Structure formats: structure tokens, C-alpha cells
Image (cartoon, helix red, strand yellow):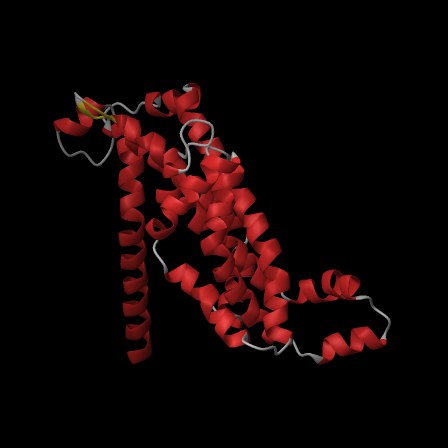
Length: 271
């Protein structure tokens, strides 16, 4: 009897948790299907006259949909480059002992601890001089300053969990290092790679200060474009809500495709 009561309370707690978790998302979707007049007119749980005009404006206005394309472009580029750079670095930290390795590892993490505003002016002046200002590559490289240390830290934990005897056995069997690394080693830490890709993607996707300051038109992120909803007549709440719903989708898709790796990664790795 007591066990049934415990299960009932746990089920109720989980249900309440998910309701509270989904409530902001539901309200955002609810607002995105309303006109601005209906939103300001009063509180309604469902739209009186659902409309997709807000989404239609985003998909038909180049100033809006280009913001999404720009954000996706530099975020994907940053994720690929961050993981590619972090893999050999994490392998070195996990397999070799060298002078100052602990200090270097800690220095990498301090870059993640520092606020983005500290690096804003140097990046701005450097990009103006070398032609990387307002480019997807420029934003991706700037985000690597924070994502590479995080990626190295996560991957090092996974790689340290793989026995070193595997490296030695592969060398005895005649495997070259590139063949061993890509054919044998990386499949063993694919969960860690999935977790790392998830975090680097999300941190790059939600970062605004660097992305907004280092771009003007060609690589302007969607978060900066969303400020267009503010005008002299007020805020276009319906359009802003629709933009917010579409901003959530890329992260949700990433979680869906790497969900299995994330679950294993949280169970096995450093995260």
C-alpha cells in the first residue's frame, strides 16, 4: 500500500514538473497564433481566431528568414570546427603527461569562465583589419574561444575512460595512428562527441553579444533581427512570439538527433 502511494506521489510530481516545463512554450505558441490586438485585449487560453500571419511574415521577409539562415550557418560551422580542434587536444591531455599540462588545461577553462565582453573590442578591431567582420566564419571563430575549452574538457573525460591498452594493442597490430584514431578510437567515444556537439551548438546558438557586435547585415543573427519588433507604436508581440517559437526548433532538432548519445554521455562521461 505504501509503495503504491509513493508511486502515485512520484507520478503526480513528474506530471506537475512537465506541465510547468511546457507552460512557457505553450504560451509562446499561443501568442504566436494571435493578432497583436487580441494579445493586448485580454487573457485567453486559446486564440479566438488563430492566424499564421506572423509566421508568414517571417518566411516571406528576407530580413527575417536570413537571420535564421545566418544563425544556423555560423552555429553549424562553429560546432564542426570546435569538435575537430578539440578531439586531438583532448586526446593529448588524456594520454600524455608533459610539462605544464595541468596549467594549460586550467588556462583553457579560464577562457570559458571569462565574459564575452572582455574579448569584444579585440575581436572587433582584429576583424575590421583582416576582413572577417560581418562573416559567418568570423562569428564561428569568435565562438570557438569559448566552445573549444568546453569541448576539450568534456572529451578528455570520455577519452580518459578508454583504457590505454587499446592504443598499445592497435599499435602492435600494425595500425597507423590516423587509422587507429578514426577507425577504432572515435567510435568508442561517439557518445562523448554527441554530447560535445550538443553543447557547442547550443552555446553558439544562444550567444548574442559577440554575434551581434561582429555582424551588421550579411551574418546578422536572428536574435538581433528580433529587435525589429520594437517600434514607435509598441512591440509586435505576435511576431516576436512566432520568432521565438522558430528559434526553439533548431535546438529541439539537435536534441532529437543526438538524444541517445546525450543520455549515454551524461551516464558515462564527465558531464
